[in-house]
Length: 240
Ligand code: SF4
Image (cartoon, rainbow, N blue to C red; front, side, top):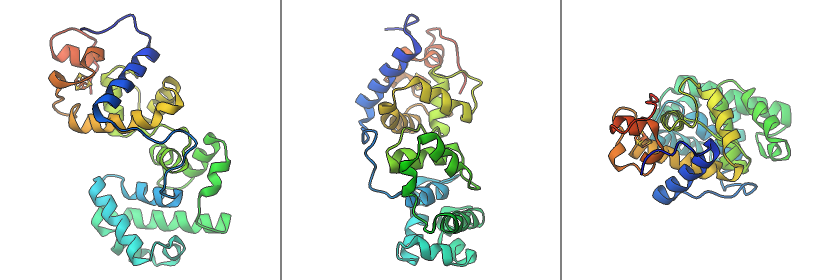
């Protein structure tokens, strides 16, 4: 079956969400149900994950937890050079260590503790803006903390989500990452944010890869103009 020109964008995104869920099976907690990782851990982990692999960032996170017994107050008190040494396995440690130290120290200064649980009482936009006021915390990082740790409605857009959404023409080809967050949040129901995000990443890693997407075995090929064009079936050829 071919591309459905009569579908609305909302119908199309709902169908893509369903097909990706059927294929990759990630089904997240519903909105309002926070995951088990506390928000300060999620924030540190997400800062560590910038420009590195999941394996490396997890190594850095575990090393930091082991060194300071899982006590973020102790990390706030630690010399930056010591933090840097602990997180060296995850790469860019000279950049990430001062960022993590500055976040934890400012939190304690402003809030009396490094805990971020107070964000759960804020409206999502306010919580996001507060997180983004820290140096090194962009929209994606803030959205990860809100979605994964606080169960709040936020759609993190990483390189995979961004690329695949453009290819699927869910967002315009010219949409930047910041704009993509707003567009996808407006397009999808909040309860689908988690599944859509996680399954789009898996799809981007396993099938819709940057250089050579496997359109011939793609579960959403019939809804994808870029894939249809690559397979010789027309479409608008949205570039990745
Ligand atoms: S059809 Fe190809 S380009 Fe489109 S989403 Fe699937 S793998 Fe990606």
